[in-house]
Image (cartoon, rainbow, N blue to C red):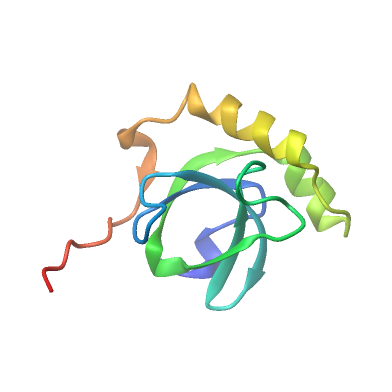
Length: 106
């Protein structure tokens, strides 16, 4: 998944790693990674770096958080949690764009 298909404030689902299946909000970019936070385990002050190949992009974008982060300010954990809970009611597997991460046997 190219970075140009992911926006600030976009909700993504982790497809690989210990956090597989968790929802995060994109709070920044560090190519080829996206910086994601969930407001609980991963606070906005220390976002998680996820490879873009390991996230599934969902259609929901929180415009308030996106505008705040784009303006150079940091979103609060409360705002991130609110955005994820708002997305939680609208997110289903059908909302996911693109390919999923293929399962690999080691």
